Structure formats: C-alpha cells, structure tokens
Image (cartoon, rainbow, N blue to C red; front, side, top):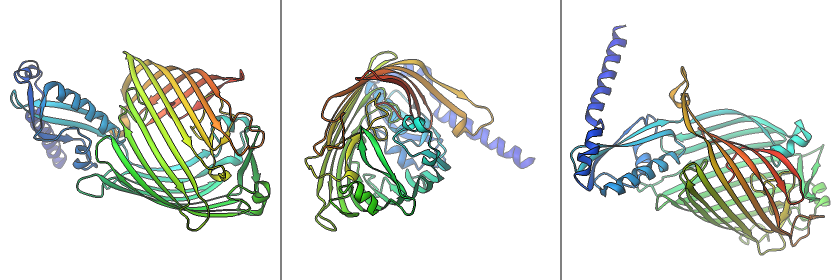
Length: 474
C-alpha cells in the first residue's frame, strides 16, 4: 500500500513539474507571441512515445532545434509536421504546441498517443476479385484461413516484421522485414520479402470479361516461390526512391498448359526470371488513409527478365497522379489518373495487366475483369463531410484503443477507363473502347486506417448495383 502511494505521489509530482516547465500560456501567445516576428526553437520535447524512438519522430518534422522561423512559417510547419507524424501510421493522435520561453525563444511540445503495434490476427478472407463477386456465389471453398503476425514498430524504429501462414483456397507462407533507416542520416532503407504460394485452382483465362477457373483435384495447379530485396532512399520528407530486385519461379500443371499455352510463356509450364524495378514517389497528402488535401504521384519502371534464367523480356511503365482540394469548408474534390504502358505484345497471361482485380478497377464494373497490355484509368469524386471528425473515449479500454475517432463522407463520383488488348482475350468485349461509371457513395473513416465504403453506381450499359469496399476510393 505504501509503495503504491509513493508511486502515485511521484507520478503526480512529475506531471505537475512537466506542466509547470512547459505549460503553454495563452496570454503570452496573444501578447508576447506577437512582440517578435521570429521564433527560435530552443528545444523539442516529445511526450507519449513509450515505444517509438525519438529520432523516428524528429525525422518527420520540417524543422529542428536551433531553427529560426517566422511566426506564420512556424504555424504552417507545425501543421505539416503533425500530418507527417500521423502518416507514419505509428500514432492514433498527435498534438504539437509552442511553449514560449520569452518573446523570441520557444520550445516545441509534441504529445503523442501510440497505436498498438503487435497484431497476431487470425486470417479469414475471401480469395476473389472483390467482396461483390464473391457474394454472387458465396462459394465457401474460396475462403482462406490461418495466422497473420505483424509488428508495425519493431524495436521502436518504424521497422515492420510480417509473418504469414495461410491455408484454404490459397496456401501461403511469407516473411517480410522492412527497415526504413539503415544509416544515421535516416535516408537509406531496405525491405526483404520471401514467399511461397500454392493453389489447386487458378484463373487461366477470361471469357466475356469473366475469369475462367480450373481446379486440379490431384495436384497443385500452380506453385510460386519468390523473393525480393528493395533499397529505398528518402532524401526529403515527401520524396522516396526505390530500387528492387526480385526472383520468381512459377510452375503450372500440364492441364493449365493445354487450356492456355501462353499462361507463362509459349508452351512452357515453368517460368523463372529476375525482375528489376525503379520507383519514384512524391507523397504530399494530408492523410495516406483517407486524403482530403494534397497531392501524390508515382512513376515505376519494371523490367521482367534480365537475359538470364529465361528468355522473358517484358517492360512496364506505371504512372499515377492524384490531387485533393478543399473547395470550401467540409466540401472536397479528389481526382486521380493512372496509366500502365507495355510495348510488348507477347505478354504472358500470368503477367497481364488488367482492370477489375483488387481495388484497381472502374466503380460499377465490380463483376467484370478487362484483360489487356496497356490501360488508363481516371477517377473523380466530390465529397461532403456529412459528419465531421469526432472522437469518443471508451472507458475501461487501453489508451491505444480507448480513444476512438470517426467521420462520414457523402460523395458523388465518376470513373473512365480504357484497356488496350492486342492479344485478343476470348470475347473480351470491354477492351479497346472507353468504359465509364458513376454513382453516389457513403464513406466511413476511423482509426487504425479503417475505411468502409458503400456505393451505388451505374455503368455505361445501364447496369447498377450496391457495392462494398474497404479502401479509400481515390
């Protein structure tokens, strides 16, 4: 009892001393703050980072101790730095305050609420294009199950460790380890990925813009072993360069070869190659989870096959740009374009480009796939903040989960796309002509990067439906 009382006493004293040392005086901000047009940052104090190393947080700031900033510049720097910190996906909440020492000198106080970083979660997922296509058949055999362990802030250095063991429709084992900063300058990083996959059923072609499936009752229809090593260079806060080397080995059965002799390469049931990629990314979004302001653009060059292990030689250029604008309070405009260009006409089906897989597609075409070699996709949406961001304190729950925030957005959207198919997939009627869709949607956004969308949309054929998704629309 005595120990508990003493501990409580020291905690309270510590809190009081900290508040006295760094308390923000609102009177000084209104009077002394304006006495000098320049503020010199004396020290930066971080509170709440029980796991995360301080240098990881300081890396996201647009200023450092000793900098001299104009008052207006300081306010903008604090706002941008807060966005940068939250975009690390390490914290649920961040607050940056100025504590004046005198009219010129100031301390910066960063108050953080860390997320929960270790997630040993059971896997229960649908192995289909999207939830909407699975709901057409509710085929229980297409369910995957297993265990997925992710440590998002391994060693407190923003490192990510992922271990996966998945069974069911797809069997998969995976190890992924990301080290964002290898050097003291915190510019060079590395990512390692190793995975093994096997399936007894795969899509071997498309017909009427739907996937054709084959299931082998006796053996694996498909096996894949792959590994990759990626080096990243983040010379500035918003810009990242990446260079990747990937090894892949794919095998299919004779049955797949009979159904599609160009599934891998002409009449081959095994494909082994080295892949090289370079990517430049500029990310100035206010939130990577559900952006409302800012911009994003990416350019990625990929060469499949380097003249060793196989004769495969395939080049891809992937370009993407997005823009987010606040039109007026609570009203936002979002737009994005993406183009994938492949000059090769000998593209194996396995490495085909296409729309309708995962989240890369036209809204209102959820039931279709459009295979091809090159393509372009344009999306636009006007969003109204139906319910402004609110937070709720859940009593009796850990702080990392107990402060729950959410918002709702109502949106009108329109998508356009074009897929160039020079191979001629069987009766692929949606390729080689413009496709478009439009509709209305309701988006729910919450903590831990949760986004849920319900959209009612129409395509150019007059078909309509209610569709569900779990990522941001743009």
